[in-house]
Length: 475
Image 1 (cartoon, rainbow, N blue to C red):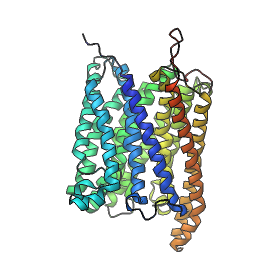
Image 2: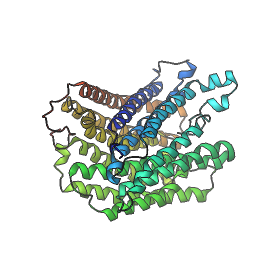
Image 3: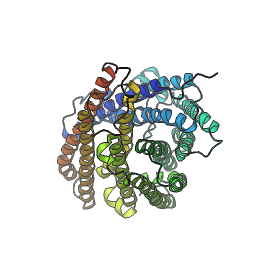
Image 4: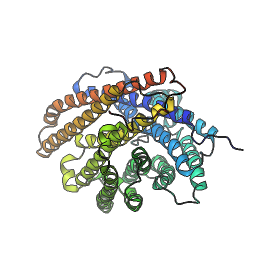
């Protein structure tokens, strides 16, 4: 008889802890990178801590350290409950956990030291980071990543297939597609531009990889988790299962074509650029259906926005998602691109979607699950509330600030002013960005401290009520 528990809660906890550690590393790297714009970079002249390498630490720690760990934690919690079966192998799950941490650490090593040690040892092509956004993982590690992604897919697809004797809930649709898409996307983005298609063709494929990493990995896992957690916390079904499937198929149809919009006004053929613009606008129409579905689910119990901090995190992320997708449909137009191309507007957009949307959803999940994972109530609800408000206000401030900076830069360049004029005009915005980033950083410090104090608290009495998240407590 199989006595394997349905969910390995220790594994979920470890993934969340690892994800938060990488988030702190990413925030520190981002803060250091921002200081160079204020002429206060503390490691000027240190080659392996140059701002360009620190920026890559920032983006990779977010994508593969924070997001990957935490989204897998949510999947390890949700998939067995939705399918009724545990994941394929507990051993493989733990092997993958440690493999992910090793890959991220080796990637950091390759980014920081690869160019120097690679030339010294004569293996620079294999050790140093690749020149692909979010694909900087050293070539030596890429085969290991591909094998790991295949094992992740097998580990989760086994319970989903075993539970397919009954209709699959939409979350499982998203998870299944996301795991399979990610394998194909990673192989495409990390091998084809590097070995087979240089120049404009390689850039087009790299653009597909960049955007599909968000749209075909982070998005389906993120939406799948929201389709699970929001109804469970609110104790009511999603408003419309049919609308949720429209969102799924719309994502599958439109999103793979979006990537070239990262290279508008480039040497990539214009038919590909036009196709990317049309597909991007199409995605925003699909996102509207998903937004309506969640708002309609929450609307009848709107009071939970004040009583449930996890729901507040998730709803804020949903609102941010609608804002950033509407912005995307506008900014991708060729007319708009004449102003905002290569400006800080794009940086603000990226921060809102990666942290303000998916980061907020993850923080909502941790707020809900952490007390259950450590079997203790939260040490301080006040700290959790401060965490939310500092993160939310800091994110909005950074988004608006960088959007304004981008407009100033874009109109300055368009009027053919000297480049230095746009730099001088941007300094106040960059200073304000650092202030907003500090708010976000302080919020995460409070949250990590609260997690630690909660886990270290004395165990509750045996007769106490089961520990839950903040689903029905004032926040």
